[in-house]
View 1 (cartoon, one colour):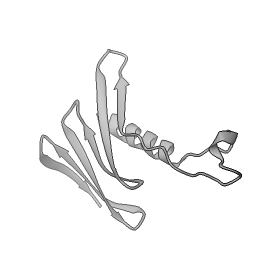
View 2 (cartoon, helix red, strand yellow; view 1 turned 30 degrees about the horizontal axis):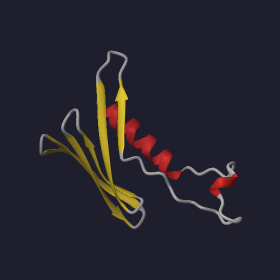
View 3 (cartoon, helix red, strand yellow; view 1 turned 90 degrees about the vertical axis):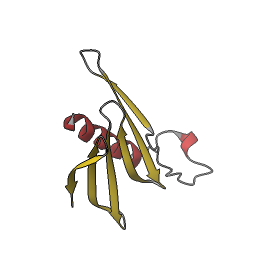
View 4 (cartoon, rainbow, N blue to C red; view 1 turned 45 degrees about the vertical axis):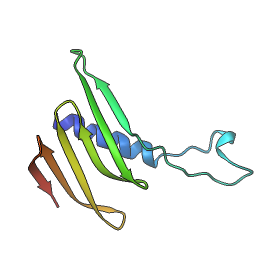
Length: 100
């Protein structure tokens, strides 16, 4: 399950940080539009048919919470400027892991 959460977070970061200038519709009269796409809900289906749902919350473009609906796990993110300085993993409402 941890691999799923880590891969989901990596995907969210990649998606939110990517931009493309290949599509002329992305540019308004030559100005660059760098509005990120923020994933709000991710559903993944494993080969055995089990589905996993993770919902994300943001403060602007910063991820503040990832809620694994399937396993009732929540990860909270704390920032110092633009850097994540602490993550807290809660399982069934009880903090299991804190990383600083």
